[in-house]
Length: 226
Length: 226
Image (cartoon, rainbow over all chains, first blue to last red; front, side, top):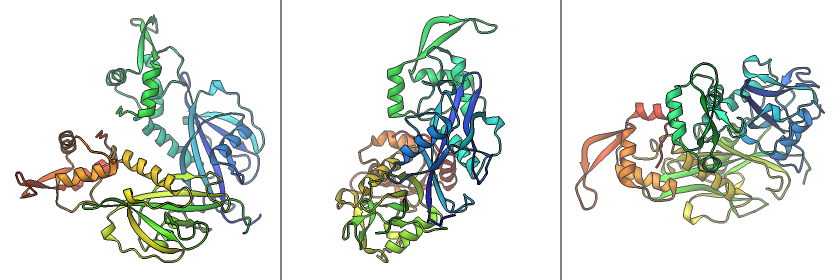
């Protein structure tokens, strides 16, 4: 093994959300040592002359086939012992997508790639569980100052679909009445005239996002305690 | 110049706040090329086997004499052209301290080190102005979800001192009546029986932080729109 000082890598924490399945995470099975055959976050070494964003998009595409234009920088993990090979510092990125909008296929450096439900995680290589938990925490915090759901829910959805999305990310139940009242007060939702029969009880209204208000709040932020 | 792949550095954005002077920033004058003689953020290369936090504390101490136990990770800047020498990725950290609590002295790698008022900044080397602006923005955002001032104001202070601190960080004036009302509602301030004569008008009350409530909000966060 060459001794090359400190190396720099990137890792991608790509969360998936599908109304029926809840929150999942995109993992790859490692083709090489260390942790050969083990599951890990997609990622790899930054190439000379390449930006961090280019590196993480490239690695994600190479290892999973998933092409994402935008991932947000999460945190840089620099414990010198986090990799058994040598001192490798990793800049982690994260994002939240609809798994059914992408086709995944393992490619270079990865034996396999797959979505895992968060409550059915395999053992993860390196400090990737720590990185994943850090991303999960950031995602939880993020929904209190930025609206989510636009790309994750169907164009027309039931209020319960939005509740389920928030509960999946928070990992806990919410006070539904309070949530509804606060969420509607932001004006990011338009209640449609259409109603659908959804189980017992009265038919429920369909909603859609008010694009203008939604993206305004995404730019300016809001304060939303759930 | 050796060709050593990507190098990793750390930079420290240390803001100072003093009631009389407002917001300042700790800079060093570079001893070596590139930008020899120019002003820059304290920082330098991470050593093999060293954590990022160790590196930034060491560089800060070496270059300015300032010893800080805790700096918060800000962001990692990875534009491959940000350093004219070669591809150097920098992990930036930031903090906010009382300048008069530290003695500064330039040491290795720095010709000089000095606090600069934010409105009297010299030209900065590399992308350090961008890093500084990013830190300024984060600091602004941070005061809306975490109390500040405990280590920055005197143990007993006038409400106007707290207003001035917030205005310095925000870089704008605030609605004083609204600010006072909201700030008092958090319960982090105790109004003392002591009053002091401060200019014309009635004597003003002295305040101190309620330690328990202050640190509770620092742990749990709050939502404070100013």
